[in-house]
Length: 139
Image (cartoon, rainbow, N blue to C red; front, top):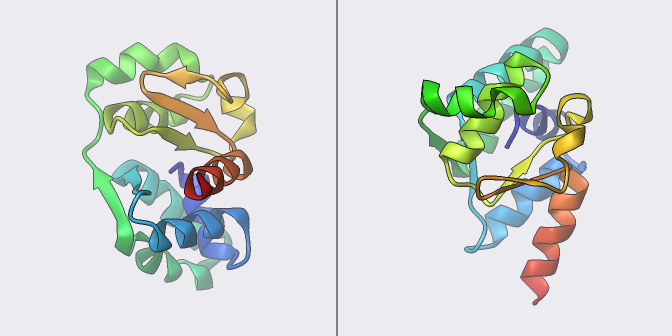
């Protein structure tokens, strides 16, 4: 989960990002993962833009597995795949966690990676990720 997905889930109880959290809560087959880096970024943005919603984040993270930060070597390996250096740890974190999906709404920096795999991780927009997860739940 990218920081922007955590942010969106915290500010919008009826949005796609929150629906991903709710689906994961209802399914034993879906585990949400993120890193402390993403959590800190989401919390910083919430406090700056929607201070009243920042308190929602810990509740949302109750069922999210936090992974250690990726190694410097892995960060170097994926460095050239995203244009913003602040997003490199997000991608590296997903690869490090061996996540099946990296869910990110950051189309500015991840547009070229949408629908592609980096390591084991498929990079998807939140709507595409939700659709994929719902399809998996049905089949």
